[in-house]
Length: 93
Picture 1: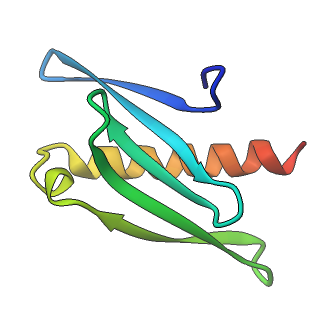
Picture 2 (picture 1 turned 120 degrees about the vertical axis):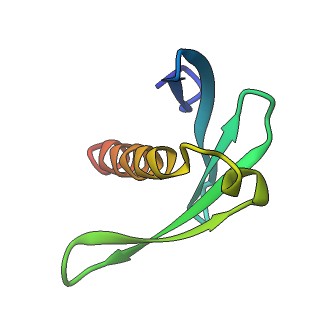
């Protein structure tokens, strides 16, 4: 996590390094966005808390650019981990 509160994800798929930025999009309507290093939005996640189970359910919206990515499954799992990390860190404050 950097000073802006963004999580920087660096991948090395097939020896090619790429940076992705996972950030908190808004405060009142909690949502997260994964962008590439150029700022192109790849996916958006909206968490919804399930009070009975005390966990989150995510609504995930992807773009066409994300759909063409060969490693989209790994990026999706990594985004879920980043969202859970961010939510758990903000709950402890």
